[in-house]
Image (cartoon, rainbow, N blue to C red; front, side, top):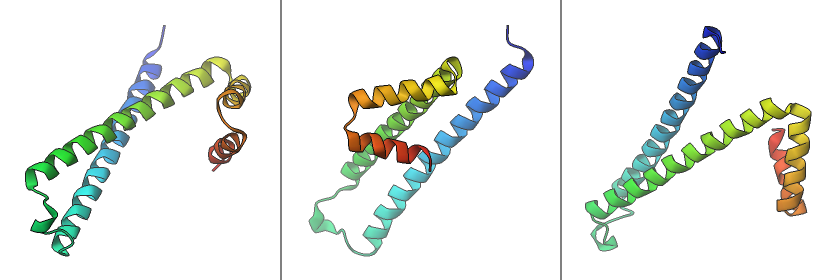
Length: 119
């Protein structure tokens, strides 16, 4: 049975994740929109580019929806990894991860993963 402290900590972690996703989503949307508007203002896109507002809006909508989906998948994967890390313990988790990587990655990819983990 979990105590109130555990529940409060879990709620805080979930809120932090949600806020992080929202911040990432907003910053991506702002970046894309600002970049598009900058190109329009600089005259890099004009009527001859056959870009209409409707097509642009649909493209943005699809791209941002896909970005949100990918961010949600990353968060889901991170939660699974954290759960396994807790269940298996740090040493066993690292061993299991290394074994899995050696089975599915090429040797140079294994090194890239190792390098990225310690940055």
